[in-house]
Image (cartoon, rainbow, N blue to C red):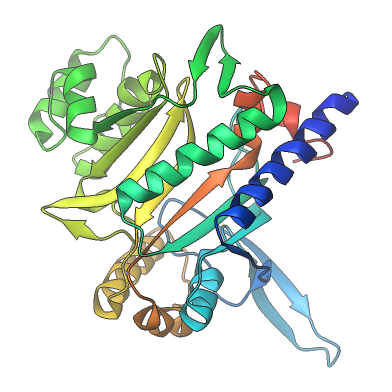
Length: 322
């Protein structure tokens, strides 16, 4: 394997230090949670790495490497009721591309009393601080373009779909017709979520953040994950620079009835794909003790790709072999 130059390691050290300094200045507590857990994330589009653990008494148990520290961090948040953040490695099965690896580094954080707008501003500040730490200016050069990290576009999912396809995302027949008429051949599904993702992945996402850094927000309810739904929209956002997704942010659910409903739906979707996973009852019960809050996750390796103008995630990861 080609050895990475020292400047990559120094840059990673500098960026992570800048992130920690930012959260220290803004009053957040850094926390540390287990990588190996009894319960996996139930998101139907994310698959955990399963492990067989043998204890000293010879008993074997099934455990899961975390796909994000979300569940454990929310358990902590319910106890200490204070802004928290964590930088850690996470693991997801069936990943592999120029932007995806099974193991990668994530920043996850939660802010009490924040709404989605507050969290977008928080995210923008993290980009500014990390860019300043490397170049001394709030700007990056990526894929032949210069980006001012202080100036962001905000666009709804509805607006983005209409801008790039001429169709609104709730028009299922229109989306199907768009795919049938597109120059690329697509297998057309009768499932709305599949059609939405196909249009999004091929015709919307690659154009996000090309002209300027972009927050896209207000998703259809089906794509809300564990975000609140208000006025028929999932209160979540994604942040893009140069077509690369960097952050997922959520105005989080703290209603245990709604949370259980969402998790049971996700568990059933996983079961249809042959994956039977348990539900973490402690996680559900803990969320009732959390005040209004928002949370986000940032892929640090992808952030480094953008900050260092790299095309492939392996170029910034160092010794990752998988």
